[in-house]
Structures are given as structure tokens and as C-alpha cells.
Image (cartoon, rainbow, N blue to C red; front, side, top):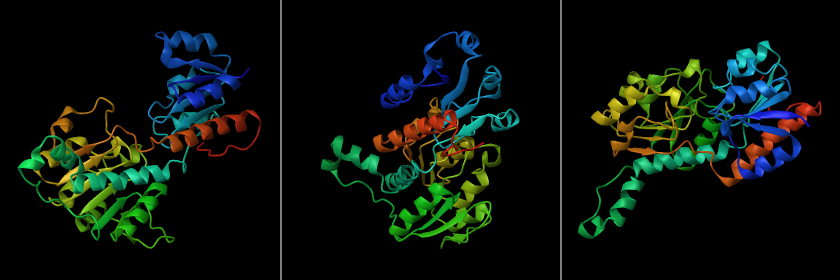
Amino acid sequence: MTEILMTGPYPDWDMADLEARYRVHKLWQVEDKDALIASHADEIRAIATRGELGASAALMAKLPKLEIVSCYGVGTDAIDLAYARENSIRVTNTPDVLTEDVADIGIGLLLAVARKIPQADAHVRNGSWRKGNMPLVTRVCGKKLGIVGMGRVGAAVARRAAAFDCTVAYFDRQERDDLPYAFVGDLAELARQNEFLIVTLAGGDSTRHIIDAAVLAALGADGILINISRGSTVDETALLAALETGAIKGAGLDVFWNEPTIDERFLQLANVVLQPHHASGTVETRKAMGQLVRDNLAAHFSGQSLLTPVV
């Protein structure tokens, strides 16, 4: 039976199928991880991982028979792709199947921050409504909205924003001729032109802290930032300062720099809505993600073309 190493658990429906097809070594269940790896290094041919766990060069180097890393998630910034290429190790991820759910959360977070939905819920629950109405909030429909990164998720967010009669513009490495939205080649200028800014970029060194103090200053005191990309794309020190001082109106965050041990200052702020990196966390999407991981492994070991190759 083919042997695979798993860096973290998948939902039960995926685990059952994997354990029926492969001999699965569960790295998260043992204290001495190095001992587990060493004892099976010559048999393990695949790593099944999650986006936030990835696969480092150090881990892959310990597995001389490694052929493929199959990632449960779109982000591969935690996988050493350069090492994988140099050593002919295939890498797959799970794009497309989570696009719509992530885009939904982008708009959901925007509505939650602008319309103060969490505060409205608390206003009813704690009895404040009996004492008076809550303060007025911010409209979303018809506003100007900028998207940072016009890939699959960015385009899906744009479609939703257009349904709210928002004027959509975007920043990316290059303009897309297939979309009707305005391209703005300067990120700070995009922030300056729009009241809402939704970040949908991939992670990695090229986008690290791309949302910095200058971009937040350009977004301004009426601006709202939504991040559904990676925590690395936002300079959290600058973001916290902007939220604490009112340099921007608010933020909705599904991702953080040091998740799940996030900066505790976020917990004290009333102008931020927090999500536990759960944008793709629906039953439907997680089943599709797991299926794609398993299908990529099956394709590889049967000599067929990978469904969603990264490397």
C-alpha cells in the first residue's frame, strides 16, 4: 500500500477515504515527529498538507522517495516551491472550488463592518435597544470599491460588488482585457479613489506588506479595509495604528500574520470584524477541496495528468 505523510487532519470524510487507499502517517498525532519521519522516510511517496501548514524544504529533504505534495487549500506560500522544482517533486492545490465562498465572505465582512452587524446584534441582545436606537451606519450600495488582486477571487468579488451597484476598480500586476472594471496601476491611488478596499492577493514575498501605512493613509478616515487573502499581505503594525487612531473607519479580517495566535490588540477594537480564517469553511466547499486533493493523489499514482498542478 502506498504510504503518505499528513501534516494535519482533514475532515472525517476525507480521512476515511485516504486511509482506505493509503497507509497514512499522521504527523500531528506524535510527539517525536522526527522519529516518525525517519522510520518511514524510505517508503513515503506523498505529503498531504494544508495551506497554512505547507511543506518546508527541510521536511521534503527528509523524504528521499517523495514524489508529490498535495495541498488542501489554494495558498502554497508555505510550501517551498523552489525546492520542489529542483527535486522534481510535484505540487498541487485546490483552486476554483473555494472561490465563490471566499468572495461571499469578502462581501459579508464588508457589510458587517460598514453596517455594524455585530454591534447591532449586541444592541438587541444586551437590552440597549429598549433605551434607544443605535447610531447610524455606512451604506455599501452605490459606493466605490477597489479590489487588490484581480484573480479568481477578485473577479468573483467584483461580480458581487457590481450587484450592489458599486463602481469597481482594481490593482494587479497587469491589466486584464477580459474584464469591464477600471485598472489602477498604483495601489495607493486605488486606495485614494475608493471608500472600500478588498484584498484578494496571493501570499508570498512579492506581496508581503503590500498594504502598508501609505496605502492605509490613502484609504483615509472613511475607508474600510477587507482582507480575505493572506495575513502577510497587510502590515499589521500599520493597520492596528490606523484602526486605533481612526485613520481608517474599520476593517474586516479573515486572515492574520500570526494566526491563530493573533495580536491581542485586535480583540479590543470595536471597528474591526474578525474571522478565524474560515472563508472557505462551508461543508460544500471543504468536501470539494478534499475531493480535489484525493483526485490529484490518485491521478499521480495512476500515471495520469494532475488536475491542478502548481509545480
